[in-house]
Image (cartoon, rainbow, N blue to C red; front, side):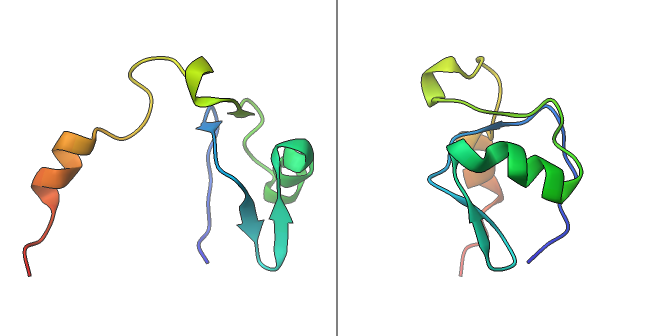
Length: 67
């Protein structure tokens, strides 16, 4: 578990979980209430997310620790 504070995010997961409660796209407004944040965040299909949003996988790969 972690403490998450965010806003303006675009989610496209199968589910989100807080403690033992699971949230889906249909229950995302309930998730927003529980978190007390994410007022302008959305749960959108990947195709609707603007370019430039999300992790840069090439940059992340460079940070990978070789073990």
